[in-house]
Image (cartoon, rainbow, N blue to C red; front, side, top):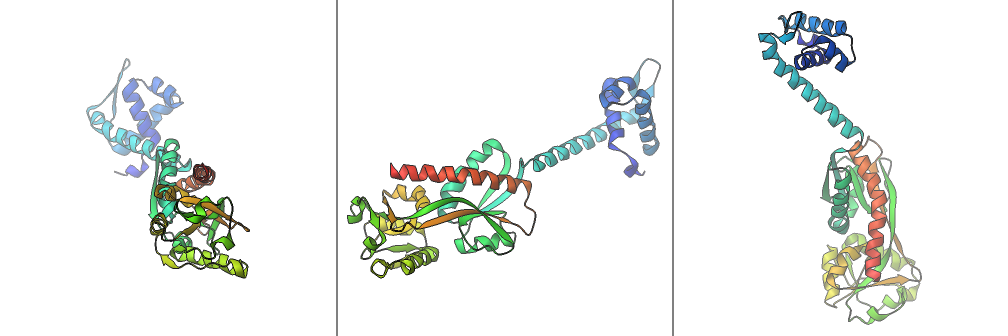
Length: 310
């Protein structure tokens, strides 16, 4: 039996007639004439090889074989309707899975809050957070391991594009008892004799760049480098050293009871970007979440910085 010749319109006619017991009423539901509905049923019966309806001058009723076949037709239509709904959700960025990479603070503090807020708008979009070192973000987006990434501004090459989300100044974190905690204005040269611990090679390189661009009497050198920013913040909380981070780290640093001091003359800024692939098409769900992040992240950063200033 060549069921590939069966059409969805024929199944729709079958189900409508079975429910309404009338070719004319079924035609009204489907936007067809009674004769067009009758033709659809005749074609379906020809393909199936059995009569679907018993027709009388007063009533249309399913035949015995028609009753047995109705459930299969209804099942096909339900699956098609579900597929249409899924396609509509995907097309409108309302469903799908998005893998987003970010380094520790952004992955642990910003992304979960963003996912919570986005779920209110798009409950069918599943966002997976992937802890990713800063140095690996671009490569993972380029090779398809990640749909998106959030992280410091980096050279992207030809396969990834970065869209600026917000700027974050480098700040000093120290214990409340630290001599610099009460300073109203902090300059780079004030850190020259201050023990500093850098969090990871990325922060170490940033501090080195600051050191290289600073005047000779204002150059600073970390006394130690640890792998995680939480370790650096813990060391600072005990007064053993201070640490330099972008200001958005306040989302985590505030839990350590540390004092944030902006360092000026000059103020050093880190730009945070949302990275997307350009060598392959992003899914509608990923594109939708990326657009949401570009609007949401600046607001999150402002709330974090305001809380630290207060």
